[in-house]
Length: 186
Image 1 (cartoon, rainbow, N blue to C red):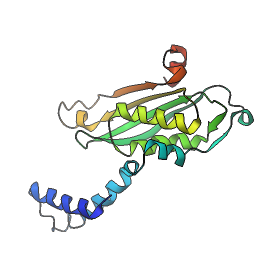
Image 2: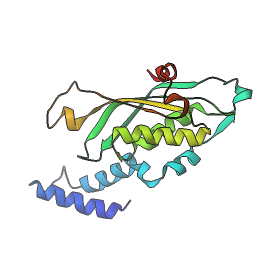
Image 3: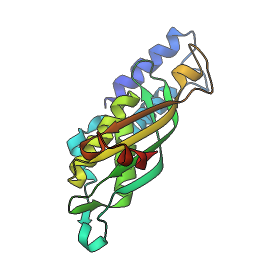
Image 4: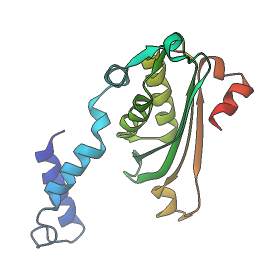
C-alpha cells in the first residue's frame, strides 16, 4: 500500500468535507487512516493461492482421526463493502469441509477467514474466496461456507434498516447437491 498517497488523499477528503486538516483533532488523522487501512485491508496484498500457502498447515487425517467433516462455527470477521467502503460487521462464518487425507490446523481456518475478509469485498465473493482457499489449503474439493453479517451501507445509510442481516452460502464438491451435508454449516 502507498501510505503517502493515502495520507495525501485523506487530507484532501477532510478539506473537501469542509474540515481543517491542521486542527488539533485532525492533524494526525491522515497518518492514522493510512495505518488503519494497511491493517484492515491487509488481505489485498495476497492472492487466494498465497493465503492458502500461508495458512496451509495440515496434519494426517488418519493420525488425527478426522475421517468425517470438520466444522468450525461462529468465526468472527469484518470487512468493507467495495461499493461504499462501508463496514460489514457482526459477521460470523461457519466453515465445513470433508478431509481428503489431510486436515487443517483449526486456527488456520479462522486465519483464512480473517485474511480473506481483509479486502474491499462483497459478502458473496468472500464466501467463494474462503471456500477456494480452504479447498486448496486442505486439499479437499468438498467445502461449505455460510456467512451472516450486517452491512452499514444498509443499516446506517440508504434504507437505514438497522436490524437487517445478510446471509450467503457457498457450496463446493459434495456439498453442492447434498442437503444433509449443507445442514452442517447451519
